[in-house]
Length: 256
Image (cartoon, rainbow, N blue to C red; front, side, top):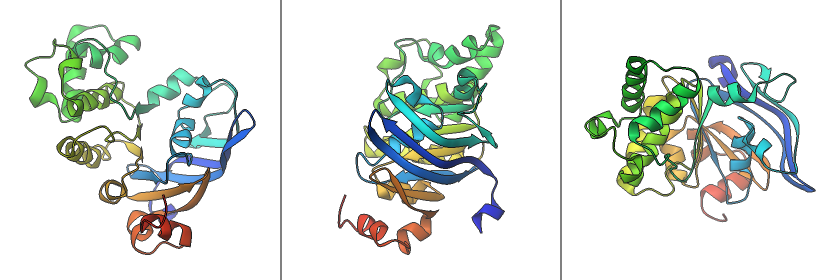
């Protein structure tokens, strides 16, 4: 079984989330494995993005949110007492649906996080910027214009700047909330290739509306529907022999 083969990096246990009186997640229990890509699929509004944001406590920023249950990273509950949320978000990087580079140079975008964490020596920052851009498969495209605005890049390049920015602080986990939804097919292909390379060094969780994308890049897939986890398993099994009828109906396009 998968739980014996792979190390569990992230585990949610009976995790529920409420926006005021409205329950958005219902008792989600799910293991995500180290150095694997886990994809969340399901129709709009089913809780995928809400759940991914529980893993680095981004939902804390929304007024009226209440969370019950637990989310563990390496066995430590991120909602437990004494958790430093700043350190948590350093360990758990996030890439959003819309690329959001800072209105600064490419170099300053990547160097920002390391500077906040106390790295000031220029040679160290130079190394981090180059390593991060290489890690995001962008160095060869931008190495001659590091001090140009990141906002001048194409959409796909901007998204890779955001990935480089996320990995510059050396996280363990990368959360990607529909990272390709605003991109053209060629840029999407580059991001997908990058995800497959990055999992050698990071545990990756990706929300996607694109089931072909989930099939291409992920090792495991979780199908969400109306705030509940319907089915979770190896991607090839979810797409070829799902256990639940509801999963099969969604994958074959009968609804969603």
